[in-house]
View 1: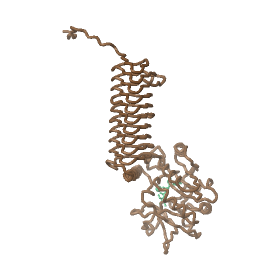
View 2: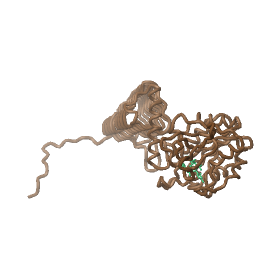
View 3: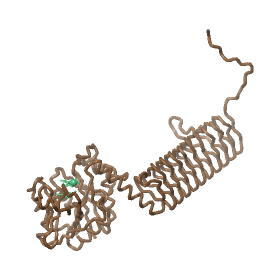
View 4: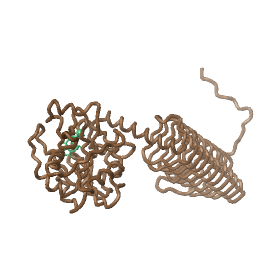
Length: 455
Ligand code: UD1
Ligand code: CA
């Protein structure tokens, strides 16, 4: 199939009450319209995607600059038919046109494929839905034998037509050559003075082109977002779907309503995810990972059996198997923890490789560091990686022991098996198996009298 997808996104979205164009508002961590672009991208065959922009055009263009999209500017919003017409010059000769909406984000590619298959048989595929309350929508008008013959907009509908509960979702697919013929025939002689795309339905019926109406698997697929209440409803539904997919795949969620996935979470079997956890970007959990309450995990890989204890923030980290992180730990980008490592409370790491079985258990900053295996980094240790201008590396060999409250002034290296006495400020390299003590000596003064309060 050869498909031109036209996504309409020129409307103002004034009910969002936002400086941000509506279709850029995030749902599940990505712009609403990105969901539509992605669904369309999963269609089989050769697919070109066009985005019709108008209100906030520059910001939409900027936000989607990296996308394989052709932008068509609709300078004035004269209606959905007019909007589609703006993208038609970029539509190839014998293709199928699929019309989608930037503010109807959760449409599934399976549904779109079904519509395109109808259009491939030289028909018009129309997506309709029955609603308990059809107020405001275009109504699907059928003849005596049940064939669709027209769509009447709510504002133009008679009382009898308003009683119809089958409504237009706006989503349709049809051969491009029909649109080229029909779009110029649209007239704005209606209640809203707009060029209605929906009028092509009557033109199709009059031309003897069959109209096949199908329904989406779920109503949420065709739910549009007009305000932030609807956005929040759709967000919740979307999150629920993702939670169910995870549970089906063998993950236990302490509460499926209290986990948010803003990106892609891939999880092995028997993971446990506690409440109030947020996953952003691409996150992979191997089997048996435990994520404690209130953790935020972003663009990271977590190895099998690893535990991220409560209130930890993990970003851009690669964590191997059997590691323990937190509670209250912060792993920043470039952190690599080997198997069995332990990062404890109030520890921050950045660009730090920490070897197998090594421990940084309390109150430390480890940045720009390469730490070997079996190293013990005592409480309060700081790698002084920044001199105000440059960042420098700290290297610690296998089996070293760093006493509490040490400051390791980079660039510096500490050899394998070396020991650093507590409270040291280490500025020179320490050789293998050496003891470094770099602190003021203790002196005791006997008979010392405390100062007395002046009278
Ligand atoms: C439209 C349909 C209606 C359907 C409803 C479903 C028409 C005439 N009516 O009505 O049958 O039930 O959607 O939600 O098509 N847009 C542009 N440029 C324009 C006008 C609209 O890009 O000039 C975009 C808007 O940004 C929006 C979409 O098209 O994303 C729908 O426009 P809107 O004005 O909301 O149409 P409705 O009146 O809801
Ligand atoms: Ca609408």
